[in-house]
Image (cartoon, rainbow, N blue to C red):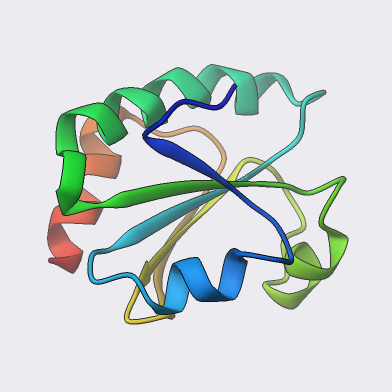
Amino acid sequence: MSTASVIHLDESNFDQTVSESNVPVLVDFWASWCGPCRMIAPVLEEIAKEQGEKIQIGKVDVDSNPAISNRFGIRNIPTLLFFKGGEVKDQVVGLTSKADLVSRLQGLK
C-alpha cells in the first residue's frame, strides 16, 4: 500500500515527520481489515502525487501503533487528521470525497 508519495508512520517517525514538516500533513489512521480504509487509500495516493511538495500524506496502521491512535483518540477508522505546524487543525472520520480532502488541505496553506 506504500508509494513514494505516501509515508508510513509509526512510533519512531511520527512526531518528527508531523512536527518538522513545512507543509500541511494529512495522516490517515487505517487498518488492513477495514474496507472503507482500502477504498480511500487510492484517493490519498492520487492527492499525494498531484500535490507533490505542497503537502505530505502519512498513514498510521492502528493495529501496529495503538499508542499513536490512543494519543489522538482514534475510535473509528478511517480517521484523517490534518496537521499544520505539528498541531491538529481538522479531521474527517469515515469516507469523504477527493474534492473535500483537497479543499481542506488548501485551507491549511
